[in-house]
Image 1 (tube, rainbow, N blue to C red):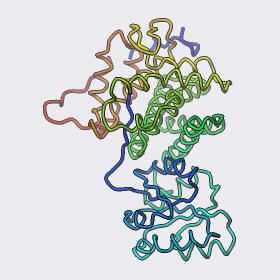
Image 2 (image 1 turned 135 degrees about the vertical axis):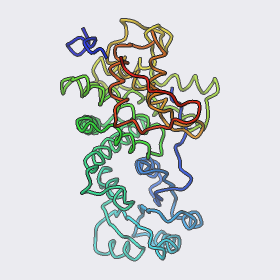
Image 3 (image 1 turned 90 degrees about the vertical axis):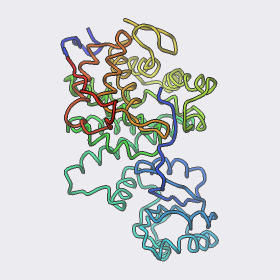
Image 4 (image 1 turned 45 degrees about the vertical axis):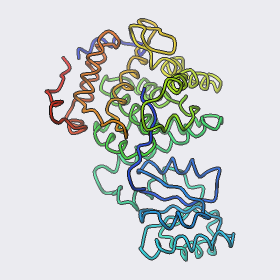
Length: 394
């Protein structure tokens, strides 16, 4: 029996870091809140590359691209206002969209922001999902009346929750349980729509590799559980475990996570500590189920015992762990990186099949029904001698 109360066999059928940066920033952040700037920058990277500047970096701001500006400044400080006025002047003249986050919404602050070129004003404590939604609208990425609006809103909610989760883990704060729950709900409602391709198209826009991977694997896992007909509670368990599976990477040095190329042996050893780091982090906070803890600790283990960190296999790996491992490997294969192209879905699935006794082949065949459908047929690129017929789930 599976960990979900029925037999999964009734169905016949390490990513490294590296930035996903594009050549030109999509969003430009100007903020004088030094402790919050990185967190806000990473949240904004949902839409692509985000460059962040201190207001004193007048030259850097002046050279920034005319995309969307998010300005988070103390508008009671005269020196800050003067620097911002000068730095933003060329972008104001060009008509670049500018969203201001205000410390207070007084008429005086709003007048000052408008004089600096604000097109949209929001309170500084605006929840990340609302902020990301507004930035998406300014970029023209979100159309509330489009058929894709629902999955976009769910993606924004899941991405904002992931940002809060990883920021809390990296800073040593308690993990935000409410944000985790909101992300799980968004993932499962997106899976109900049955459009995995739309979800992955949004994931590819994300500029932060760790965030992108978490959203990719959790989206795949939510779709997998939905296809297998799991109950709502079991689907929440799967999506939550997938969302948290790489939480330990929040404690891995950024120079390793963002390295644009394969890791050297020393860096690989540090990276391979992330399952145990994540497990210890969740145990210390408490409140997480044994299955979730197992997924975080053992998602790099393989059935033949050749995985890590403990080299366990076989019956020691619950079905949930086996599912997350399949989603994690497949996600790493289809991800785009500066040093490697994305693998086509058919080729990535072929790799899973070729792993044989390392993976649960009953689950691999069921997973093929998730990723080889029409919704994902256009993802990846087959060209030249690599092109071949799709691997089918028997």
